[in-house]
Length: 335
Image (cartoon, rainbow, N blue to C red; front, side, top):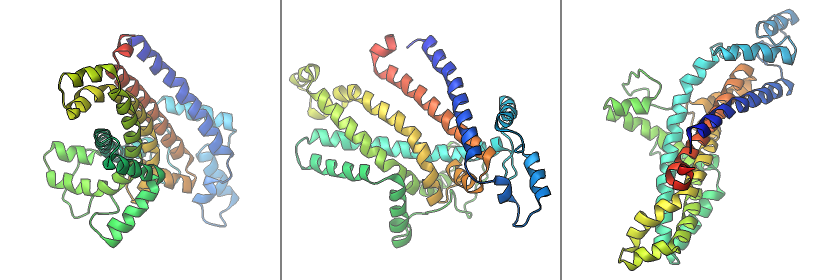
Protein backbone atom coordinates (compact mmCIF):
# COMPACT_ATOMS: atom_id res chain seq x y z
CA UNK A 1 0.00 0.00 0.00
CA UNK A 2 1.73 3.14 -1.22
CA UNK A 3 1.66 6.64 0.16
CA UNK A 4 -0.07 7.79 -3.03
CA UNK A 5 -2.96 5.46 -2.28
CA UNK A 6 -3.34 6.83 1.24
CA UNK A 7 -3.19 10.39 -0.08
CA UNK A 8 -5.88 9.54 -2.62
CA UNK A 9 -8.11 8.14 0.11
CA UNK A 10 -7.64 11.27 2.18
CA UNK A 11 -8.47 13.51 -0.77
CA UNK A 12 -11.62 11.50 -1.49
CA UNK A 13 -12.74 12.20 2.07
CA UNK A 14 -13.32 15.86 1.21
CA UNK A 15 -16.02 15.34 -1.47
CA UNK A 16 -17.54 12.63 0.73
CA UNK A 17 -17.92 15.04 3.63
CA UNK A 18 -19.22 17.72 1.27
CA UNK A 19 -21.85 15.33 -0.08
CA UNK A 20 -22.92 14.37 3.43
CA UNK A 21 -23.12 18.04 4.39
CA UNK A 22 -25.34 18.88 1.39
CA UNK A 23 -27.73 15.97 1.96
CA UNK A 24 -28.02 16.56 5.69
CA UNK A 25 -28.42 20.31 5.34
CA UNK A 26 -31.24 20.00 2.82
CA UNK A 27 -33.06 17.16 4.59
CA UNK A 28 -33.03 18.93 7.95
CA UNK A 29 -34.69 21.95 6.37
CA UNK A 30 -37.40 20.21 4.37
CA UNK A 31 -38.70 17.97 7.17
CA UNK A 32 -41.70 19.35 9.10
CA UNK A 33 -41.13 21.36 12.25
CA UNK A 34 -39.85 24.83 13.11
CA UNK A 35 -36.96 24.98 15.60
CA UNK A 36 -37.65 28.65 16.30
CA UNK A 37 -41.26 27.96 17.27
CA UNK A 38 -40.02 25.33 19.75
CA UNK A 39 -37.78 27.90 21.43
CA UNK A 40 -40.60 30.31 22.17
CA UNK A 41 -43.60 29.86 24.46
CA UNK A 42 -47.09 29.38 23.00
CA UNK A 43 -48.63 32.62 21.79
CA UNK A 44 -45.32 34.28 20.91
CA UNK A 45 -45.63 37.26 18.63
CA UNK A 46 -44.88 36.90 14.94
CA UNK A 47 -42.32 39.71 15.25
CA UNK A 48 -40.34 37.72 17.85
CA UNK A 49 -40.39 34.61 15.66
CA UNK A 50 -39.22 36.60 12.62
CA UNK A 51 -36.45 38.23 14.63
CA UNK A 52 -35.10 34.89 15.83
CA UNK A 53 -35.34 33.38 12.35
CA UNK A 54 -33.24 36.25 11.08
CA UNK A 55 -30.77 35.85 13.96
CA UNK A 56 -30.14 32.19 13.08
CA UNK A 57 -30.21 32.82 9.33
CA UNK A 58 -33.34 30.74 8.75
CA UNK A 59 -35.17 33.48 6.86
CA UNK A 60 -33.03 33.05 3.71
CA UNK A 61 -33.42 30.42 0.99
CA UNK A 62 -31.84 26.99 1.48
CA UNK A 63 -28.99 27.62 -1.03
CA UNK A 64 -28.20 30.94 0.68
CA UNK A 65 -28.27 29.31 4.11
CA UNK A 66 -25.96 26.55 2.92
CA UNK A 67 -23.49 29.00 1.37
CA UNK A 68 -23.29 31.00 4.60
CA UNK A 69 -22.98 27.86 6.71
CA UNK A 70 -20.28 26.36 4.47
CA UNK A 71 -18.24 29.57 4.59
CA UNK A 72 -18.38 29.44 8.38
CA UNK A 73 -17.46 25.72 8.48
CA UNK A 74 -14.35 26.35 6.38
CA UNK A 75 -13.18 28.65 9.18
CA UNK A 76 -14.05 26.09 11.87
CA UNK A 77 -17.32 27.69 12.92
CA UNK A 78 -20.29 25.28 12.94
CA UNK A 79 -22.63 27.84 14.42
CA UNK A 80 -24.41 28.10 17.75
CA UNK A 81 -26.77 25.51 19.18
CA UNK A 82 -30.34 26.78 19.06
CA UNK A 83 -31.46 24.90 22.17
CA UNK A 84 -28.31 25.07 24.33
CA UNK A 85 -27.04 28.51 23.20
CA UNK A 86 -23.46 27.21 23.03
CA UNK A 87 -20.89 26.84 20.28
CA UNK A 88 -21.47 23.59 18.36
CA UNK A 89 -17.77 22.71 18.13
CA UNK A 90 -17.34 23.14 21.89
CA UNK A 91 -20.40 20.99 22.59
CA UNK A 92 -19.29 18.19 20.29
CA UNK A 93 -15.67 18.20 21.43
CA UNK A 94 -16.82 18.21 25.04
CA UNK A 95 -19.02 15.12 24.61
CA UNK A 96 -17.00 13.19 22.01
CA UNK A 97 -14.32 11.85 24.42
CA UNK A 98 -16.98 10.16 26.56
CA UNK A 99 -18.41 8.42 23.50
CA UNK A 100 -14.97 7.39 22.25
CA UNK A 101 -14.16 5.84 25.64
CA UNK A 102 -17.47 3.98 25.59
CA UNK A 103 -16.90 2.70 22.05
CA UNK A 104 -13.28 1.74 22.82
CA UNK A 105 -14.35 -0.31 25.85
CA UNK A 106 -17.14 -1.95 23.85
CA UNK A 107 -14.74 -2.76 21.03
CA UNK A 108 -12.21 -4.26 23.46
CA UNK A 109 -14.87 -6.43 25.08
CA UNK A 110 -16.22 -7.53 21.69
CA UNK A 111 -12.79 -8.41 20.27
CA UNK A 112 -11.62 -10.37 23.31
CA UNK A 113 -14.93 -12.18 23.75
CA UNK A 114 -15.31 -12.91 20.03
CA UNK A 115 -11.73 -14.20 19.80
CA UNK A 116 -12.11 -16.50 22.81
CA UNK A 117 -15.44 -17.87 21.57
CA UNK A 118 -14.08 -18.55 18.08
CA UNK A 119 -10.88 -20.22 19.31
CA UNK A 120 -12.84 -22.38 21.78
CA UNK A 121 -15.38 -23.40 19.16
CA UNK A 122 -12.69 -24.44 16.67
CA UNK A 123 -10.59 -26.22 19.30
CA UNK A 124 -13.62 -28.30 20.31
CA UNK A 125 -15.02 -28.47 16.77
CA UNK A 126 -18.00 -30.82 16.49
CA UNK A 127 -18.32 -31.29 20.26
CA UNK A 128 -20.72 -29.79 22.77
CA UNK A 129 -18.71 -26.57 23.45
CA UNK A 130 -18.82 -25.83 19.72
CA UNK A 131 -22.59 -26.33 19.54
CA UNK A 132 -23.14 -24.31 22.72
CA UNK A 133 -21.11 -21.41 21.33
CA UNK A 134 -23.13 -21.54 18.09
CA UNK A 135 -26.28 -21.13 20.16
CA UNK A 136 -24.79 -18.30 22.20
CA UNK A 137 -23.68 -16.38 19.10
CA UNK A 138 -27.12 -16.88 17.54
CA UNK A 139 -28.69 -15.26 20.60
CA UNK A 140 -26.10 -12.47 20.54
CA UNK A 141 -26.82 -11.69 16.90
CA UNK A 142 -30.58 -11.93 17.36
CA UNK A 143 -30.86 -9.36 20.16
CA UNK A 144 -29.98 -5.73 19.26
CA UNK A 145 -27.73 -3.65 21.48
CA UNK A 146 -30.48 -1.38 22.82
CA UNK A 147 -32.49 -4.41 23.98
CA UNK A 148 -29.40 -5.76 25.74
CA UNK A 149 -29.17 -2.36 27.39
CA UNK A 150 -32.75 -2.52 28.65
CA UNK A 151 -32.20 -6.07 29.93
CA UNK A 152 -29.04 -4.98 31.76
CA UNK A 153 -30.84 -2.04 33.36
CA UNK A 154 -33.63 -4.33 34.56
CA UNK A 155 -31.54 -7.27 35.73
CA UNK A 156 -28.26 -5.71 36.90
CA UNK A 157 -29.55 -2.30 37.86
CA UNK A 158 -32.97 -2.94 39.38
CA UNK A 159 -33.46 -6.62 40.28
CA UNK A 160 -29.81 -7.19 41.25
CA UNK A 161 -28.31 -3.70 41.65
CA UNK A 162 -24.64 -4.57 41.27
CA UNK A 163 -23.57 -1.87 38.80
CA UNK A 164 -24.55 1.78 38.19
CA UNK A 165 -27.03 2.32 35.37
CA UNK A 166 -26.71 6.04 34.72
CA UNK A 167 -24.13 8.76 34.36
CA UNK A 168 -20.41 8.64 33.82
CA UNK A 169 -19.10 9.06 37.36
CA UNK A 170 -20.65 9.20 40.83
CA UNK A 171 -20.84 12.77 42.21
CA UNK A 172 -19.12 11.66 45.41
CA UNK A 173 -15.92 10.59 43.63
CA UNK A 174 -13.17 13.18 44.06
CA UNK A 175 -11.80 13.81 40.58
CA UNK A 176 -10.73 17.06 38.94
CA UNK A 177 -10.06 16.18 35.29
CA UNK A 178 -7.97 18.39 33.06
CA UNK A 179 -9.32 16.77 29.89
CA UNK A 180 -12.61 15.18 28.83
CA UNK A 181 -10.95 11.76 28.49
CA UNK A 182 -11.72 10.85 32.09
CA UNK A 183 -10.78 7.16 31.97
CA UNK A 184 -7.56 7.67 30.05
CA UNK A 185 -6.50 10.52 32.31
CA UNK A 186 -7.30 8.55 35.47
CA UNK A 187 -5.20 5.61 34.27
CA UNK A 188 -2.26 7.78 33.17
CA UNK A 189 -2.23 9.77 36.42
CA UNK A 190 -2.46 6.61 38.52
CA UNK A 191 -5.88 7.36 40.04
CA UNK A 192 -6.94 3.73 39.97
CA UNK A 193 -9.92 4.26 42.27
CA UNK A 194 -11.37 6.81 39.88
CA UNK A 195 -10.60 4.56 36.91
CA UNK A 196 -12.44 1.68 38.61
CA UNK A 197 -15.44 3.91 39.28
CA UNK A 198 -15.48 5.00 35.64
CA UNK A 199 -15.23 1.39 34.46
CA UNK A 200 -18.19 0.42 36.65
CA UNK A 201 -20.29 3.05 34.87
CA UNK A 202 -18.99 1.88 31.49
CA UNK A 203 -19.55 -1.84 32.12
CA UNK A 204 -23.25 -2.09 31.27
CA UNK A 205 -23.46 0.28 28.27
CA UNK A 206 -20.20 -1.06 26.83
CA UNK A 207 -21.38 -4.64 27.37
CA UNK A 208 -24.69 -3.93 25.66
CA UNK A 209 -22.86 -2.48 22.65
CA UNK A 210 -20.30 -5.28 22.60
CA UNK A 211 -22.44 -8.42 22.68
CA UNK A 212 -23.88 -8.31 19.12
CA UNK A 213 -20.47 -7.40 17.71
CA UNK A 214 -18.75 -10.16 19.72
CA UNK A 215 -21.19 -12.68 18.28
CA UNK A 216 -20.49 -11.47 14.75
CA UNK A 217 -16.72 -11.59 15.25
CA UNK A 218 -16.96 -15.10 16.69
CA UNK A 219 -19.00 -16.33 13.71
CA UNK A 220 -16.69 -14.83 11.07
CA UNK A 221 -13.48 -15.77 12.85
CA UNK A 222 -14.64 -19.32 13.47
CA UNK A 223 -15.47 -19.80 9.80
CA UNK A 224 -12.11 -18.35 8.76
CA UNK A 225 -10.23 -20.50 11.28
CA UNK A 226 -11.92 -23.68 10.11
CA UNK A 227 -10.96 -22.83 6.54
CA UNK A 228 -7.34 -22.18 7.55
CA UNK A 229 -7.18 -25.45 9.48
CA UNK A 230 -7.80 -27.30 6.22
CA UNK A 231 -4.87 -25.68 4.43
CA UNK A 232 -1.70 -27.59 3.53
CA UNK A 233 0.62 -25.36 5.55
CA UNK A 234 -1.37 -26.13 8.70
CA UNK A 235 -1.22 -29.86 7.97
CA UNK A 236 2.53 -29.57 7.55
CA UNK A 237 2.91 -27.82 10.88
CA UNK A 238 0.79 -30.44 12.64
CA UNK A 239 2.93 -33.20 11.12
CA UNK A 240 5.92 -31.54 12.80
CA UNK A 241 4.31 -32.25 16.15
CA UNK A 242 2.74 -28.88 17.06
CA UNK A 243 -0.19 -29.14 19.47
CA UNK A 244 -3.67 -28.18 18.27
CA UNK A 245 -3.72 -25.14 20.55
CA UNK A 246 -0.35 -23.93 19.24
CA UNK A 247 -1.45 -24.43 15.64
CA UNK A 248 -4.58 -22.38 16.30
CA UNK A 249 -2.86 -19.48 18.04
CA UNK A 250 0.45 -19.32 16.19
CA UNK A 251 -0.35 -20.48 12.65
CA UNK A 252 -4.05 -20.38 11.79
CA UNK A 253 -5.11 -17.28 13.73
CA UNK A 254 -2.84 -14.70 12.02
CA UNK A 255 -4.12 -15.83 8.61
CA UNK A 256 -7.74 -15.95 9.75
CA UNK A 257 -7.78 -12.44 11.22
CA UNK A 258 -8.23 -10.53 7.95
CA UNK A 259 -12.02 -11.10 7.55
CA UNK A 260 -12.54 -10.46 11.26
CA UNK A 261 -10.56 -7.20 11.13
CA UNK A 262 -12.62 -6.05 8.15
CA UNK A 263 -15.86 -6.84 10.00
CA UNK A 264 -14.62 -5.13 13.15
CA UNK A 265 -13.71 -1.97 11.26
CA UNK A 266 -17.07 -1.80 9.54
CA UNK A 267 -18.93 -2.53 12.76
CA UNK A 268 -16.98 0.17 14.62
CA UNK A 269 -19.01 2.81 12.83
CA UNK A 270 -22.21 0.97 13.75
CA UNK A 271 -21.00 0.96 17.35
CA UNK A 272 -20.70 4.74 17.22
CA UNK A 273 -24.20 4.94 15.76
CA UNK A 274 -25.48 2.51 18.39
CA UNK A 275 -24.33 4.82 21.14
CA UNK A 276 -27.27 7.11 20.37
CA UNK A 277 -29.80 4.77 21.98
CA UNK A 278 -27.41 3.20 24.49
CA UNK A 279 -26.33 6.57 25.88
CA UNK A 280 -29.95 7.63 26.15
CA UNK A 281 -30.90 4.43 28.01
CA UNK A 282 -28.01 4.77 30.47
CA UNK A 283 -28.10 8.60 30.65
CA UNK A 284 -24.47 8.57 29.52
CA UNK A 285 -23.19 12.06 28.63
CA UNK A 286 -21.81 11.48 25.14
CA UNK A 287 -22.59 12.70 21.63
CA UNK A 288 -25.28 10.03 21.26
CA UNK A 289 -27.29 11.49 24.11
CA UNK A 290 -26.56 14.95 22.74
CA UNK A 291 -27.95 13.85 19.36
CA UNK A 292 -31.22 12.69 20.94
CA UNK A 293 -31.70 16.09 22.53
CA UNK A 294 -30.84 17.84 19.27
CA UNK A 295 -33.45 15.79 17.38
CA UNK A 296 -36.14 16.48 19.98
CA UNK A 297 -35.39 20.20 19.97
CA UNK A 298 -34.92 20.39 16.17
CA UNK A 299 -31.52 21.95 16.82
CA UNK A 300 -30.32 22.25 13.21
CA UNK A 301 -26.75 23.57 13.78
CA UNK A 302 -26.05 20.95 16.43
CA UNK A 303 -27.50 18.12 14.32
CA UNK A 304 -25.37 19.15 11.36
CA UNK A 305 -22.24 19.19 13.48
CA UNK A 306 -23.02 15.81 15.03
CA UNK A 307 -23.77 14.09 11.72
CA UNK A 308 -20.58 15.42 10.16
CA UNK A 309 -18.71 14.13 13.21
CA UNK A 310 -20.20 10.66 12.68
CA UNK A 311 -19.27 10.84 8.98
CA UNK A 312 -15.69 11.84 9.80
CA UNK A 313 -15.37 8.95 12.26
CA UNK A 314 -16.65 6.60 9.56
CA UNK A 315 -14.02 7.81 7.07
CA UNK A 316 -11.17 7.59 9.60
CA UNK A 317 -12.25 4.09 10.60
CA UNK A 318 -12.29 2.88 7.00
CA UNK A 319 -8.79 4.27 6.48
CA UNK A 320 -7.53 2.51 9.62
CA UNK A 321 -9.12 -0.74 8.45
CA UNK A 322 -7.25 -0.45 5.15
CA UNK A 323 -3.99 0.10 7.01
CA UNK A 324 -4.55 -2.87 9.31
CA UNK A 325 -5.51 -5.01 6.32
CA UNK A 326 -2.20 -4.12 4.69
CA UNK A 327 -0.28 -5.01 7.85
CA UNK A 328 -1.95 -8.42 8.03
CA UNK A 329 -1.77 -9.20 4.30
CA UNK A 330 1.72 -8.95 2.75
CA UNK A 331 0.25 -8.99 -0.78
CA UNK A 332 -1.66 -5.79 -0.10
CA UNK A 333 1.32 -4.23 1.70
CA UNK A 334 3.56 -4.81 -1.32
CA UNK A 335 1.01 -3.53 -3.84
